[in-house]
Length: 132
Length: 259
Ligand code: SF4
Ligand code: SF4
Image (cartoon, rainbow over all chains, first blue to last red; front, top):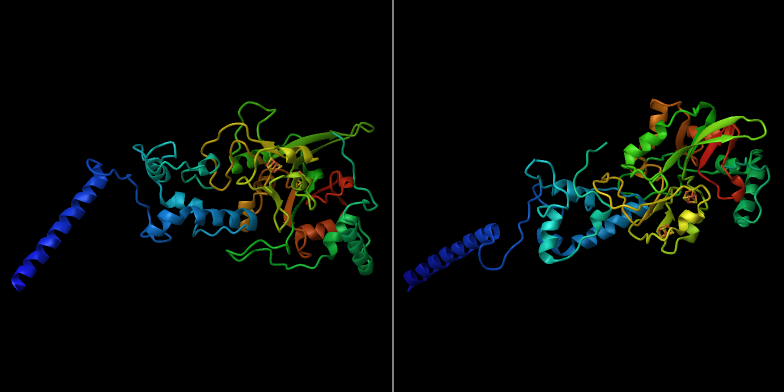
């Protein structure tokens, strides 16, 4: 009985491992199943908040921060669009950061996938600037 | 271009309660200067203009500028060039509509023929008509006196452009790309001189002022008009200075000397 249990346990773990591996492969190749957007990783170790939280709430954070910045002159980096852009920079084939006109752009890759239009870049720079 | 010098009597009909209060205080303090100057000379303020990072701007500060026209040369436009570079303003070959945050104006006295050249930009009025007319609240004055357009709420109606007596604002007609990260700007919104608010918030001074002192005539001085120890406050207290169209009673934060 105990031996059976152990066997089943090992099987389950192996299957789970397989599933995870094939899921990751899907995410990369988009070959089968539900397609996933190809999202570039940020430059830093971690994001300013948990990834799950950011996926759902980044717009609220940005919204709050923009009012703080424009009206109260608070220019902290924590939730600033400028810092998102600096960290989530994606280099094109010419190793120059791409703008939002490229489908590889961090914001655009996901927004295209979710079919949510993003207006920020009508005014804001969509890639890090040459600072002065 | 008609430019009048400041009247020596207070303007009637503009926020009379405040004016009255101020004149009373000034009288008590025994200060005998022009009305605008009294305001700055007597205001108590916190001399630490630099803010702690993350704290909001405060009304203990009023940013202003003093421009000495004896040092401003008619042929020089270093301030204009510096502004365009700093804020990423590029022309589209359409001078009638291209954005212009600062320009050089040459004025001539028709009686004497004497001419002068002066830089003209948003005057960062204390009582800005551009704010009064804005239907959305996008045109607003920050606590520290800097007048800005919040482009998140600007609908591009251009009322503020009509209301501004200094022709300080521009409307963006073209789609823009690769703006400066610190100076977001885009089609369908109105904009004007921000006093380089991103530099000011970082403890710096506007790009035009820097350029003027580096390569121009050193005519421009930027500082806190509410801090009695600031260089600008001391100079406006010592010398006769003028606000352009002071008769309108808008109390601009930009002052001119030797106009
Ligand atoms: S100069 Fe014009 S744009 Fe600037 S604060 Fe005054 S009214 Fe507004
Ligand atoms: S153009 Fe924008 S800032 Fe100017 S009055 Fe209209 S909404 Fe306000």
